[in-house]
Amino acid sequence: MAAQGEVDELFDVKNWFYIGSYQQSINEAQKVKLSSPEKEVERDVFLYRAYIAQRKYGVVLDEIRPNSSPELQAVRMFAEYLSNESRRDAIVSELDKKMAKSVDVTNTTFLLMAASIYFHDGNTDAALRVLHQGESLECLATIVQILLKIDRLDLARKELKKMVEMDEDATLTTCNSMG
Image 1 (cartoon, rainbow, N blue to C red):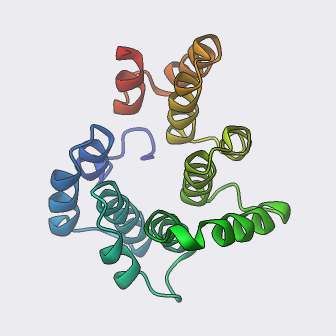
Image 2 (cartoon, rainbow, N blue to C red):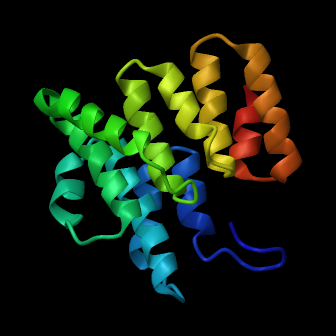
């Protein structure tokens, strides 16, 4: 998130991603010029998540290398989980081991990807536990989506209220408010 008054160089990439226009997000990510290596990692996270949303797992698995950043490794783990049914149990087991150790809660991407794996695996409780460690708007938005899927409208409203308090104008907040 950009600091107050600072322009987010990745605003369009994120916005297209959040509204589900994955190809637009990819197009924008491929042309945006960034000011720092940290922003490049953030861009790549959204780029590869958009490829995952399009079920283009091979692109993600081919392009994210073992020496890539921890954020990109988390995205790769999710792509591997989705693309390789025979490895899903092993991936969940590896994830359980990582979660048993201390997790870097500032790595929002890891939290989101771990929660996505748990949710896809049918472990809603673990997904919510992981997300509650994060403080980002995207973690809150994902919590809201999971709560809606399990028909906990009451709890989803509480989380949405937190989102509104954090940033009522953010795309994630307004998209979740529409429902």
